[in-house]
Length: 61
Picture 1 (cartoon, rainbow, N blue to C red):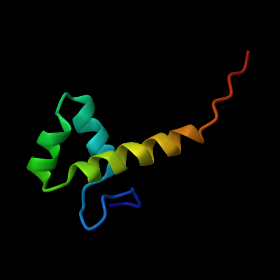
Picture 2 (picture 1 turned 90 degrees about the horizontal axis):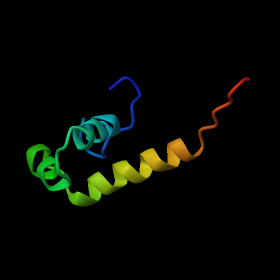
Picture 3 (picture 1 turned 135 degrees about the horizontal axis):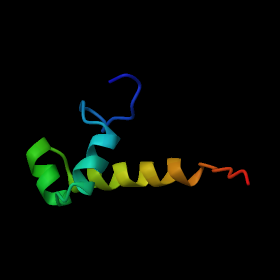
Picture 4 (picture 1 turned 45 degrees about the vertical axis):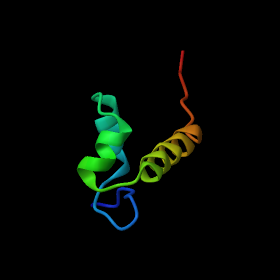
């Protein structure tokens, strides 16, 4: 999957989970539709939060 972070044992990427949540799908729906657990969904969110928490944005004035 081009180096993207995946849910362990699947080909489902973290960004796909985030996009599905952003489009309005409930975690339970995603889990059922893609054969995941709610813990998988939570892990994707935690991963994204940790990665973004390390981001630094520099604004030049």
